Every structure is written in structure tokens, then in C-alpha cells.
Length: 67
Image (tube, rainbow, N blue to C red; front, side, top):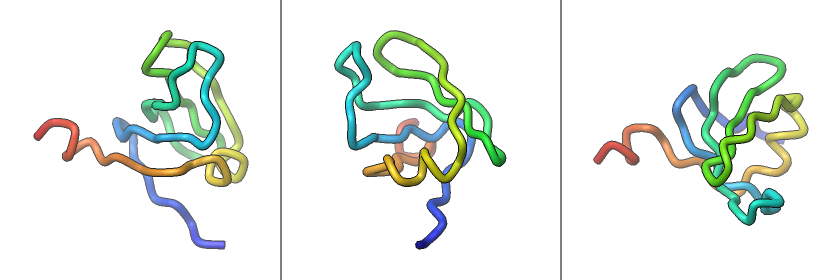
């Protein structure tokens, strides 16, 4: 299994939607646990890195968002 690279500020598109119907999350903190914030409702969730990496569909780097 390859390591998915993401940094603070990147947006993650997940396979499953949040109950607010958004599937985009912003990375707030990285490490062995990753803190993400829902772009739809603002709820913050902390997940183990391995669990989060399995549910990531696409990583949108911060540089692409600013452009």
C-alpha cells in the first residue's frame, strides 16, 4: 500500500459523504492522527492516518485551490 501524501491546507475528497452531504474536507493537522474539517458544515474530526488514507479518493493541493 502506497503512502498518500497530503499537507496542512490541502483538500481531500473522500469516498463517503459526511452527513451534511459534503465529501470535501480540509486537512488541519497531520501526524499519526490527522485532523480534518468538513468544508460543508465545519465539523472537525480526528482520524488515524491509516483509516483516513483508505477513504481518500483524491487530494487537491493547496496550490491548486489558490490558483
